[in-house]
Image (cartoon, rainbow, N blue to C red; front, side, top):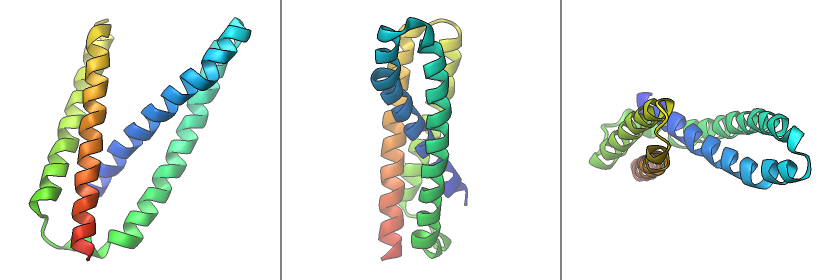
Length: 137
């Protein structure tokens, strides 16, 4: 159960980051060029839309995990699953560290921490899904 929650949190962070980047570069930047006064409103609306999309995608992912890999979760965890959990936990630590440093105004550290965090999350999700597929077959 903890593994599934950990996976959903990491997937949520990845989806939210992707949607915010897409929204910033494809939606807000053209609006800011055309009507600079509306840029803040457009970004606020895009954040709400991206959160709604993220919740919808995570609900679908959870349903698929429950249907496809639910019974496979009851067995002992293999080393690949443990490695995936570790990567996700280190991703959480990197995210908290990056947020702490960002609140202090260290913007140079922010880009490196965000990239490293997303890399840890992607690796952990891949390892966990691979382990679940191996256990299900």
